[in-house]
Structure formats: C-alpha cells, structure tokens
Image 1 (cartoon, rainbow, N blue to C red):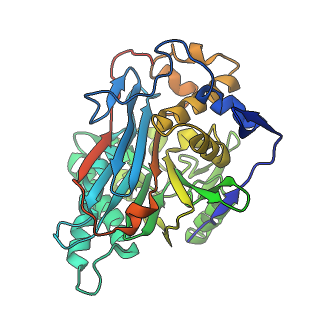
Image 2 (spheres, helix red, strand yellow):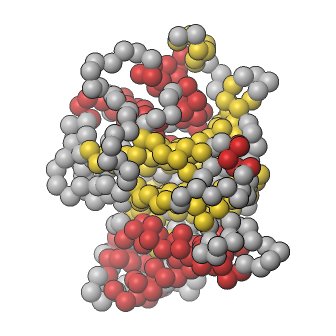
Image 3 (cartoon, rainbow, N blue to C red):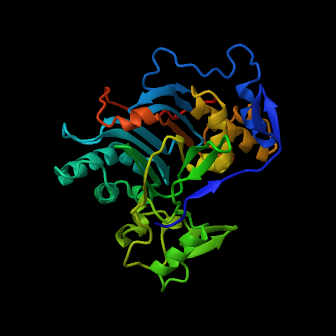
Length: 413
C-alpha cells in the first residue's frame, strides 16, 4: 500500500483552561468550547426535526446521532456554485443476507469538474459493496474483505463510465466529472479504510502513559504533490515525460489534475472521451492507450482497540487549514455534540486569517466567490465505543443518512 501511517505530535507551550491542559496554539481553536457566548450564538443543539440533518444557508449538518459502533457528527459547508461534496453514513447490515455482518459504513466523495460523479458514488457504492459481499459469502467467510471493497470501487467506476458513454453526445462535459472516494467500514471489530484521491481519515488514539491524544493518519493520499505519487506515475508511464507537470508551484497529472486516483474523470481513463466537444482545457494533444488515472483504492485493514477513541473523515478542504493533530485535539477537548461543525468553523477561521480578514466577513460571502477562500468542506466524526464494537451480533435499527444540502441561489452562512 502506498504511503505510510504516520503519528503526528505537536510540541508547544502548555497552559490551562478550566483546569484542562491545552497547547497555546490550540487555544485559538478550542477556546470557544469554554468561553461564555451571547444568547443563540454558536449553539450546537439537536432539535426536533433534524433526523436527516438541517440546512442553514450554505451549511448542512447533523450535530449528533448514533451508529452501530457509537456516536457520530456530520457537517458540510458549500463554497462552489454547486456543492461538489457528497457523503453518507450507513449503519446496520453490511449485507442483504440476514446472517450477514453488522457494521458502520462512512463515505466521503469530494467531486471535481462537476457533482455528477460524487452523486453517482453516493447512490451506488454502498449497494455495490453489499451485492459483491453477498456474492462472495460463504459459511467460512461472512465478514468484510479487502477484495469486496476493491471490487466495489471498480464496479462503481465501470458503471459511471457507462453513464458517461450514454450521455456523451448530449452532455459531453460529464466526461470531465470525477470524484475522490474515501470509505471507512467498521465490521466485526475490524476497521477497513479505502481511499482513491486526497481526502483523509485520521484516528484519535489515547496514549494512556502520557495522558494525551495522538493523531494517526490512516489513509494514503493520491496527490501529485507527493513525491511517492509522482514516482508511481512515472513507473506506470515510463515513456511519458509529461505525465506530471509543475504549474504555478503545483504538481498536476498531465498538467491538469492534482489527484492520481479517482472515480470518473473519463477523459483521463479512455481516449474516446478526450476529444471534441470536450472543453479544450481537458483535451490532451496526443492519444493514450491506457488509463492515466486509476480508480483502484489504497486499502488499510486493522483491528480496533480500546484506546482508539474516534475517527475524523474529511475532504481535503479541511486539511488545507488544520493539521491532523489540531483536528484531533479539537475533537478530544470539545463536547461531542456539533463537533463536526466546530471543526469546519475552525478551518474557516484559519482560511479567513490567511486572507487577513475576519471570519464574520467571510460568512457574508456567497457560494462561487467563496471558492476563492476555501473549498467545499465535509467532515464526519465517528466516535468509537469499544463495548459496542465488541458486540458484533448486537442488532439496533439500521439507518442511512446522506450529507447533502447545497444551494443554487445566493445564500450566506
């Protein structure tokens, strides 16, 4: 598997807030957890009617809920004219067979070149996992597997490319729509992480000996700015000196796209879609005989342990502004309810700070223009209850929730 797991620690000066040891740098993120707020400001409450989440301007959020293995919190903020991020949580059977395993499925789909691929993955990937799992089910093997997840990614890819082929004449720009795809599955006490693209999942692990929380990145990212990714691309395309190009201090595959793996992006998978009437900026000067990008995910499988406290799944819009350790510390120090929104707001404050503006002014900027300040951001925080994880046969009502929202008219947060 490309990339390595890495534990990130930050060494900074320490102070106390209400008796809790807090790093100086972290105070700017988590201080709102303790400071008194004016009435109705920064409320993180679950109200009646938010079973499927709430929409508030450019926000969609579900502040709290329960999955088979614990609690969760979700939040999405829109920056593009059309929201390109999609996400979901599926809790309950990971199979259509009654004797199949129970678990929790998390998906974050960061679209680009349009929202079509992300929407398609949101509607098909989990069902493909269940279908393929059922086909491989035996009396000896009833759990989840790397093979099932890998095949589900590739099946979803093939299905979307079939849609592109059908719509090519009437809607050729769908060939430039693609999506990163980050998936997490907890099943029978085992965690499966599959990733194609540059979204990220970080584990918060309690270091009991040091009484601190440690950030452990679990996903391998496929972005051309990584030297290992560029090396992989050169090894796969040894006869193409232009397989990666440095433009404006950013490495891009064929000078066009930063990610090296995705679902969709048909124009870089099959030559038949890399021609007119596709927009010139997506067309390559020469034909190609094998896919430039691939959909196969990097997969990590590991057992969960009692010290594993929570998982933060997020599109790269969050990680552009927060480090792994900063995000983990925020989740560890703040209340669970509304924690995904709190993470997004911490990233937005950093985005505003980088542009030397106030967060209150950033909030006034509508979608489209806002993309100049930050990307669409999706965050799912999954808390892990070791007692529930160990009870693999425990059956609760299943549920499905999709992180949606998004607006087409001018709206503010």
